Amino acid sequence: MGPSTVGDHGQLWNTTKFKKVGADIWAIKSGQIRIFCFWGPGGRLILAFGLRKKSNRHRPKDVARAARMRTEFLDQEQREG
Image 1 (cartoon, rainbow, N blue to C red):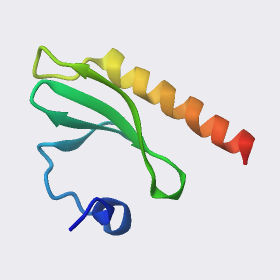
Image 2: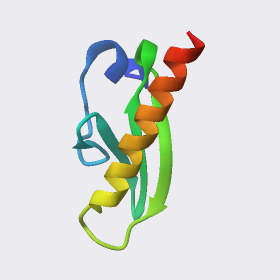
Image 3: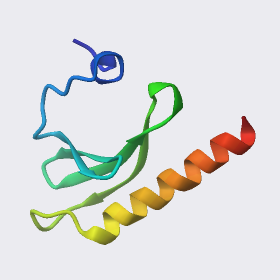
Image 4: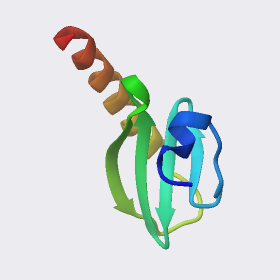
């Protein structure tokens, strides 16, 4: 199945590479690289930012940054209609 699987069917096939790390915040991981993201209107996956992790845990400030970016994005989407 292609990338539309999660958006269309809500199924996560590889929870080690794509997992929920906060309220409405997800992380895609590949090696030490983490890309924080969230779901936008219309089932779009919005990539917030990426970083190179040096520890096994997500830093709370990184999750909070992604949550702020999500709020700003959704506010802007609502203003632009």
